[in-house]
Image 1: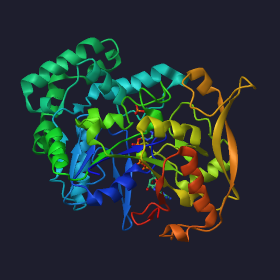
Image 2: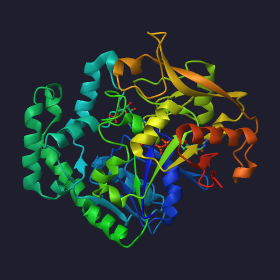
Image 3: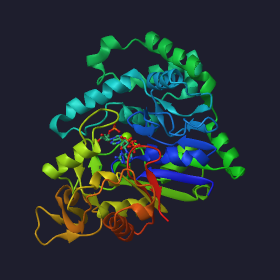
Image 4: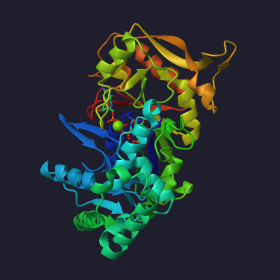
Length: 425
Ligand code: GDP
Ligand code: IMO
Ligand code: MG
């Protein structure tokens, strides 16, 4: 299985970082294929916590080549400080590569993200304000700056001038902060610093795949934040689904052998948008506190809810998932009963009921979860290291999810640590 894609199967923060860190042990290459530093991927190893925003979650293995793929948008200031942070903790980053074709987040993109959210008022998306939308818009408009542009002053200045031109109106409030010469110089400095890492990402991936070496394609965000298939417009500005791995890394579908979806044992979402199984009560608060559900990137409290198998089945089909990794099972310990959302009814139409994910925004916005109850378990399972040691009710819960989603559950997380994950027999 040389090519394995790992994606979020919900609204992000499913624990992808942890699963990738585990699988990276046997990988030659880990390549992030979309998103930017809106992502926050956490790894906990030997009591130490690592949070990655741009750097792939395989970086802790010295032999693993970690690539920031062409599909990622890179804020070079954030990347430089992430590199510095790793170096300061003794991590060798010489194996970090950045695709020369990856797009760059510019200061004006950050201004426009904030301005855009302010303009939307109460209808705001709740973005991470990391400039994903404005930078991706420039990419699509062919006004983007790419990593390779940072190595050539003449090209860089010309491209920044062209990119600023159509934004004059929106950038008027920030006029005094935009100095073409200063931006050019600052970004040339980033280019100079990062030059040793800038590479032909796709060639490295092809080389590894052609030698049957294991390549992990690391997704950020999750299926329901996908710009085409998620809960638009409350989505991110890229394709976090497995298909995104092909464009964001430069491979074809036949290079992908397996697709792993990561899901929590319940559901969370940060930012605005529909969330049919959301809990607004004490149970939701209990899950938030027990699960430490506060954003890795922005620190915002995450919205919490029960596992939604309607949405998960949709994610399984969109990604053609071959396996499911279920994280945070330990957080459900202590609930007498666990609910699972198996269908949606409507707040507006009492005759409405569906078990498929609605394509229509008005239907989705009024969808209300309908639940099945499963028995809970009281045991603390954070010390469990094999499937057999799990309480029967926990195993039954995983078996239920597997059956309901139609994808084998291959792993279950029982805590944040690298060792706190157990493989299915
Ligand atoms: P990602 O963005 O998908 O990589 O996920 P995040 O790192 O943003 O959020 C997942 C959070 O859950 C992190 O704080 C992880 O350390 C933590 N985590 C991951 N797996 C488990 C698990 O099985 N149990 C518990 N209790 N925490 C976990
Ligand atoms: P990881 O990789 C959870 C959400 C934001 C907002 C929407 C759009 O850690 O799972 P953006 O800044 O992308 O324009 O915001 O997407 N969002 C995430 N939510 N995990 C993430 O990444 C996210 N990245 C973006 O909260 O609702
Ligand atoms: Mg995260």
